[in-house]
Image 1 (cartoon, rainbow, N blue to C red):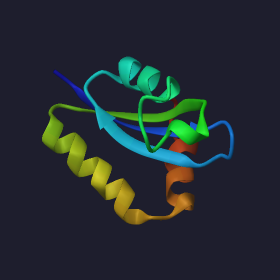
Image 2: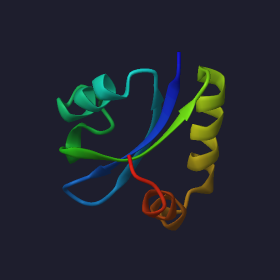
Image 3: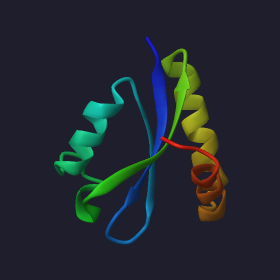
Length: 84
C-alpha cells in the first residue's frame, strides 16, 4: 500500500507542516480536528503538496530530506511546482 509525504499550510499564519502517512484524507482530518499537538494551535490546515511512495521507509526518508533543508523557500518551491 502506498505512503504519502505531505505538506500542509496553516490558513492562520502561512506556516508549513511536513509529515508522512498511509491515509492522507484521515490524517488531514486529524490535523484539522486539533488531534495533533503540534498543529492544533494553527488551525485550519490546507493540503498544498503530496508525494506518493511505495513503502513507509521511502516516505519517511523523503520526509526527513525535506525537513533537513530547513528553508521555507525550498518548501514553497515544492508547493509551487505541484498540485495536491
